Image 1: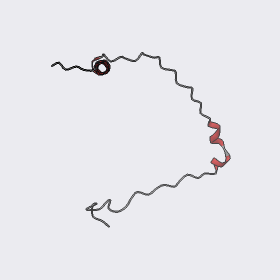
Image 2 (image 1 turned 180 degrees about the vertical axis):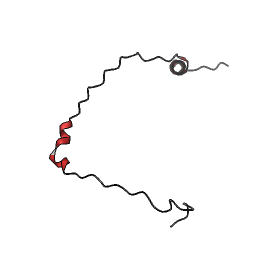
Image 3 (image 1 turned 30 degrees about the horizontal axis):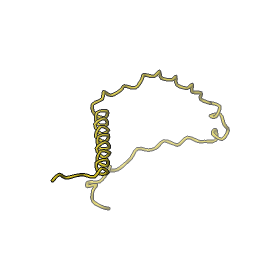
Image 4 (image 1 turned 60 degrees about the vertical axis):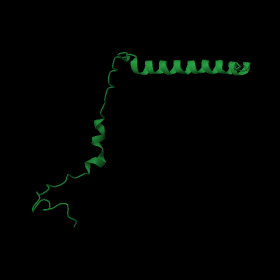
Length: 90
């Protein structure tokens, strides 16, 4: 006795095979494009010239800056530097 598959199930299987084929083709194309394609080099571009820098030295002539006094000489450190064992707590 022969097994008869109804017409609707055959049609459904045909569509599923078609979708499966497209999915496999898409996966193969993605793998080929991602892993086996030669990397494309970016097009060389000419660097833009750097912007002209203008320094406003008139700011240093402000009267508030003239009131500053320079620090005095800092004496050199006297005594032992560091601790014998720096890892012990104080």
